[in-house]
Length: 184
Length: 184
DNA sequence: ACCGGAGGTCAACGCCTGTTGGCATAGAGT
DNA sequence: ACTCTATGCCAACAGGCGTTGACCTCCGGT
Image 1 (cartoon, protein in one colour):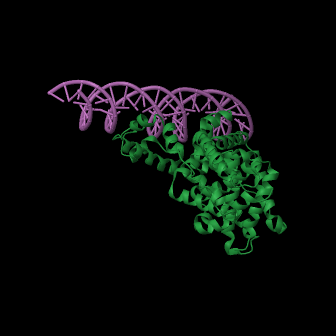
Image 2 (cartoon, helix red, strand yellow):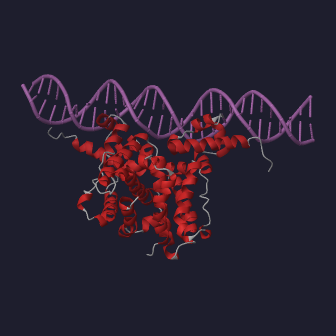
Image 3 (cartoon, chains in turn brown, yellow, blue, purple):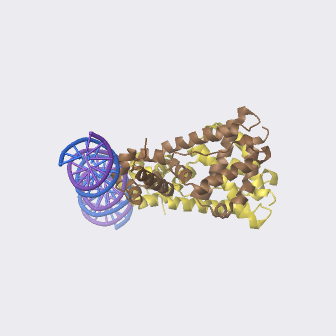
């Protein structure tokens, strides 16, 4: 269990892979390019991760790290969630890589679906007035949050890219709040 | 200018291409597979469309066909827009193909950006209280409509897929209405 | 001093891709 | 009847891909 010397190489591969997958998507990100970025031989990637699919699975391992929404004042739930997603995305390309890849790769789509269903679903269920409607409410929140990520980081629609995060929070928080709390 | 016999082949290629691009995305949709679907030889695709890029450009040619929003009662703008996008998507895979491809293909992303900036931007500008804010409002509408398409047709998030279109309109129309009309 | 294995390099394989040029065929214009 | 051109098929090319196996080179344990 003591750290092996090669852990540094492992980590370098993973970092390069995340960047390439985020920038190019699954198909265009080649093992050769990832290996070149990490300054190692392509065959090392195979030795450590078995296959390109295995590497992607390791690189796309991630967590939304949602805060406990029951700690928050009810009327600020929307604001807290929107701000959290924006922070999460600006700092970490993993979710963008997953999003880009999920468009064409079945495994990535499955993973993404699981993350949002499980993690966002659980967080939302805890603060929703009617438990039976929790999944639908979580789905609506996901649609707006993922639409934001898509237009801002992938399509780079000018008005969305140019709007500073603080303004985005102002606009989107009421939407999310309504999806969570509006009476059915 | 009279119709040539080969126009049927041209159309068959285009139909098959749209289906493959929508189902598989740009990279995974191979010219060989498209040609097989259209029951012709791969080289025919090249003869008619020059290259895979050219074929995609032809297949991704499309129009949002937005109605004239100035004809609509102001308080129903959200409902009309949401319903229109849902109708447009259920019947035509072209936009889904473009969305799937835009995740990894620069040209498709550019096209998508242009379509939403120009067409949705123009439609929105006509019904917005403050012209200076029109692009931002259009961007917000785009983020929710594209988020809906992404979660419903690409990721297939269960709660979004299971919600019937009429209920989606009920939930999303107020959001779109607010993005269009809320005072800044 | 020896050895065994982990970390790393190299060249190559088989496959699939977009793309090309040559060749057959049939039908319209003369 | 004869050409000419549009239409279509076939075989092949070059390049890039994921993946493999043989080899080299250290270094810690005995």
